[in-house]
Amino acid sequence: MISLTSPIKTKAHGWPAGAKLAALCVSTVALFYVQNAAIHAVIFAGILTLYALPGRAFFMAGLRALRLLWPFIVVVAIWHLWTGEVALGAAVILRMMSAVALANLVTMTTLLSDMIDVVRTITRPLTRFGLRPNILELAIALVIRLTPVLVEKGSLLSQSWRARSCQPSGWRIILPFTVLALDDADQVAEALRARGGFDALEDI
Amino acid sequence: MEKNVTLIALFAGLIAALGIIPAITLGFGVPITAQSLGVMLCGTILGSKRGGLAVLLFLLVVAIGVPLLSGGRGGLGVFASPSAGFLIGWPVAAFVIGLIVEKWNGAPLVIVAGIASVVGGVIVMYAFGIVGMSIALDKTLLESTGLVTAFIPGDLLKAGIAGMLTAALAKARPASVLSRADAV
Image (cartoon, rainbow over all chains, first blue to last red; front, top):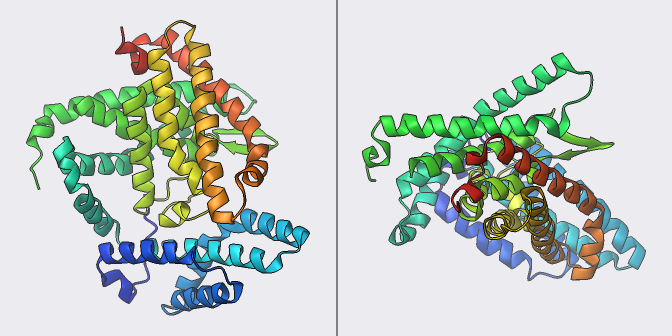
């Protein structure tokens, strides 16, 4: 399982993850207070400059991540060309791209382990309500480890379907797939208990 | 305790796998991702609390930068995009679906799970999605509703499939439908 952290090392990789996330929250809220399209264009150009600083490969990876916005850009552009409020439309599109680009920038420059440290810090107050941070971390690790296992089992199911039928399997294999996941949950839970269960987890 | 945590983690993985395996798309001309079907199944099978937590865990893993959303999307950017409202609505949808299946015992499971999936997976999820979109795109709620109506039939279909799958699972392995098993 690959994380979305950029392999291209930047200075921002070394900055504390909590500070980056706090700055992201503040700047995203601030983006929504700016109404002027020209200011939004300057902000977006500034963000593109940030992307360009670590080099061409980083810049292109950043642009690729923004591609998922194209349906929204098309819809908003057509909408505002239709109503004639071009400046407002430009502001909305630029604001949307800036917000997503900034958030992606934080994801690209922060290691998964640093993010998990932040999760541990911000969930600490929840220990009062019975949440054990080390169990949450184990659950995160289980998802990251077991997703590829499930994907492989699901692919095998769809292959065995194709061996028997010329029709595409579609949703029909979801039922056996769910049963597999339920069985896996049983086995993993047993394996965890056999190793002492959650009581054996060292408290951090 | 171990059992509940592994169930929650496995169903978070199931939502991810439903978006990643290319064969599991509900193709009707346009391939529809099965990921929101996974959210519905979390509610109908695991029940309100475990289902909601499974979706929440899935979103947490996405947010910290693992590309588990369909199309290899992930990271913090998806929570800043105009469709972020739908993602925020996912755990609430799973919780509501689970709650309805747990509380409503009077009708056949296929109908209960199907209607629960419509209420949670369509009404609740779109309520969050439309509000999110109206904020991000600076549109009124009514205008945003107009922008997403094209996707509602697909989600109604998924709700129907979620109902059928839950009933089929209950018939094959009654103990596995935990939203009901705990009540008995």
